[in-house]
Amino acid sequence: MPMTICQQIIVNMVMNNDFIRYFEKQNICNYKFFGLDYRYLDFVRTQYAKNGSVTLGELMGKFADFPCTDLSEVSQDCEFLTYQCKEIYIYNELAKTIAEGQQRFPNDGVQFLGMIESKALELRSLAPQQADYDAIVNIEKRQEIYLKTSNDPNAFIPTGFAEIDRLIGGWSRRGGELFEILARMGMGKTWILIYIAVSAWKAGFRVGIVTVEMGKDDLGFRIDTFLSGLSNSALRKGDAVDMAAYNSYVAENKGKSGILIRSKKDFQGHITPSRLKQWIEEANLDMLLLDGIGYVENERLNAAYKSDASTQTDVAEDLMAVSTDTGCPIGVTNQSNRGGSDTTQNPELENARGGDGINIHASFVMSIAYPEDSHQVISLVVKKCRFGAYGLQMQYNWDPDHGYMQSRGDVNQGGAFYGSAAG
Image (cartoon, rainbow, N blue to C red; front, side, top):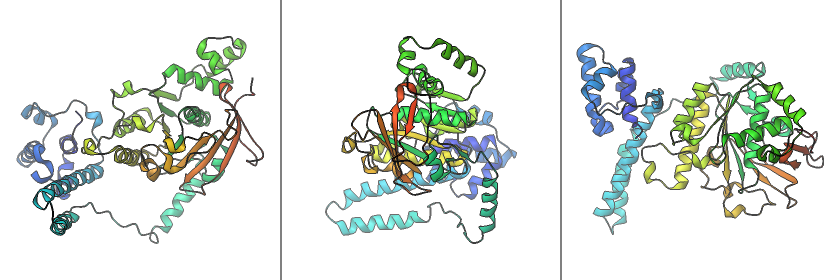
């Protein structure tokens, strides 16, 4: 089982004893917050007070049952751990109060409400408080950010779509960027995701892709198609292709790297926000793409009690936090529900499977449709854009088998794309 938030706090304390004072100042170092983990906390604080230091070895020597099998999963963000510790306690106390109130006042809503309000008032003081950001005081600081951005060619990662780049500048590396590709099953979400990865890589950025439904080689063949124009179905099946072009493509890219692929197995069977953050940092990724947000697990302690919609909200919020912490844009694919079943119409935000969780936290949402009821023309519509106007419509003549899309001039001025001529 993964470590609890309290156990992660204790690991931070023994790995860096300066953190003991930090967490003590946050007023969480007591049984109320730590519960069954308090015995570990009490030992660590006692040893530190007695000897002026305490180590992980001493903790493990005292408690053989302390779950310390994978330190790579331990967050080192003390503010985040403090926030999570308080958030979990508040949630559990409210849940306990509601359960007790239902038993004590089964038919008296007024007293039940009073009990909840009294508890909420008590817990309000424990809610994590954030320092105010004075927009006027920080005018000069924002000017510095502007000047740095204007002189940094790598502040944004090209999306691969000229129209979107004109709208938002590209995927931002300055703060949190969580973008979503929304469509029904079999509508080309993975193709678009891979195209975005290839576009970023061609611009010199390092990209990670998480795949669950597709094998790594199959996904790799799609990358080959976008980079070479060779038929994807032929590459996958072993049918005849232009071998001179294939050999030239292989020779041109020999020794290069930068598009990394992982499967669920590579995350020990559990794809979680913290493990994704670890991969971003270890592999020095500039962008992370997830082919299916539904495969990312909620790692919060109360996850087992949450609905699918609440789970996706937590996951989306945590992914945005990962992007903010690392400066790494994160893109996900998501299926629309049955309300978005008309493949000629671009799904709306309310058609996202799992509810509004991802849409609330996403900075950009783009949906896919085939307006002419065929797969020869693809329509991409911006349904949400936090940093620009939404509603942008793009249509392309579409041949994914050869990695080819051609902008249709009646919709887009100037156009995009990309790939090789259709064969």
